[in-house]
Length: 268
Image (cartoon, rainbow, N blue to C red; front, side, top):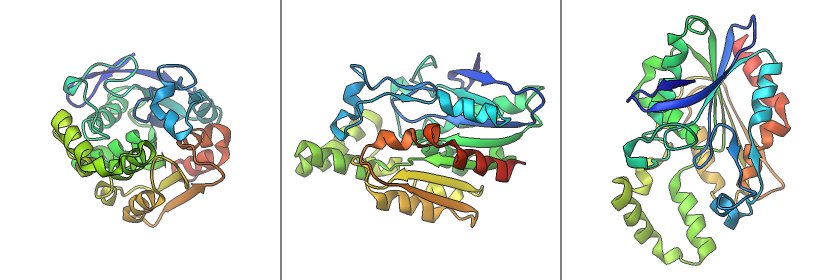
């Protein structure tokens, strides 16, 4: 099935119904991934996060099963330029800016279906999908009036990400050159694509989870995003014992209880 993004990009999706349920969770995926996850145990996808030790598969299918088994309808889709979805903005990624239109499109789609329009809505927005959600909340708050809560694994700003990458590659002195090249390709500077300020417009109960010692970012960035969320109904869970970013994406597939407890608390 497909539905249009806010700007018309066709988004390919799965709707997983739970008969008799009036609750739906909309799932947004990280950059480089698709709704399934990422086959980063295989080339060429292994190269994406391999420098930080992320050379193993990430499979989101258990997330959907856990949510379904707990009584939730699930809508999950490929962001623009990934998976089976259409190409938008010349195929350029923007760490959530363009992708925010896809988040809005998913909420509009829920409201357009006779069988889902009156359902209680929750968001499961990972990484870039989380950034896109914060940006959509800033630019289009009217679409979030009926959203009850969000779970947000691994939000990220690009500045600490590229600071880490240049450190790993031994080219820390080239950060400004990298920033300029990104601007030439996308028209955005690195700091333009940060969710930090947009998090101030998140007014739903939000559960953030993050690998504390993630080799591809810095904990202070996620702490700032979390601190900027203005609601008192929020939670930050640090994942310890690993430096691999992908372990943060696998936290809820392997530990579903906190995920289900959050949605149950705010969606029942």
